[in-house]
Length: 352
Image (tube, rainbow, N blue to C red; front, side):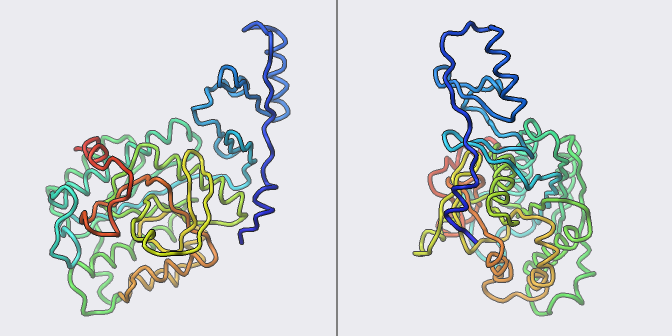
């Protein structure tokens, strides 16, 4: 799947040329820039640390969504896997702090605080992404089980004022009583039903990329744009659909697993073989693995995520370094707080 030679050959290096002794608005400079644009080349002026052909500082996002990924100094990849639409499905439940556990979460708040801050951080990240990914159609869907009515009202109010395409769905748990194996706690049953319901949405509704999100992940502002641009880049490089995680999970560092490191848009990404159930992938991956993934909505066997992990055998899964979102679990949980992130700052910035 990952052939080093192909990975290197796929890059078409950017023409890097220092233009000496020209006037700022000179005719020659303008003509040269126009020719570079016609032939799909980018020029780098290392003296001014800018790209005149893109009219950008090199510290900005140089990639053009759906067309090319540009990384200094590696060069350019012409994108063959363009992302056209993104559906974000946020699964919420404010009545249960931690499923079937008598523990407190990071920052020791009630569950609705994590849900509302997750929603706010997602909306902020989507809006940031829309500034540079304005050709992508975004939609956010909140699927809720057992939240308090006061919290549902707040969620709907936040969605309304987001000015984003959105839906709010209260999951009818009665529908899933005959689908899910009996005997589970109410919290586990509703969690399984909510995931099952989100799979049905992903399968039945049109979308290119689906981002499944649990309601205790506080996202950085650049998370959505980084994930989408990196998805285009990696799926082009690998010639394959893939799975991206938003979080750098601590527990993955407790194992001596074989891995690889790749450069995304602005972050490093590493190959992993496990995850929790917040992940981004394509609708085609969901369609191909639907019967396997829906087992998670029918029966809980440890590890619950095993059907999802099986997907990674044919579709690579990558995790960001450092984390793009923090999973607000108990501070001592290896499944929670990501390393080397200013957790408090991220938490405070997304106060509702």
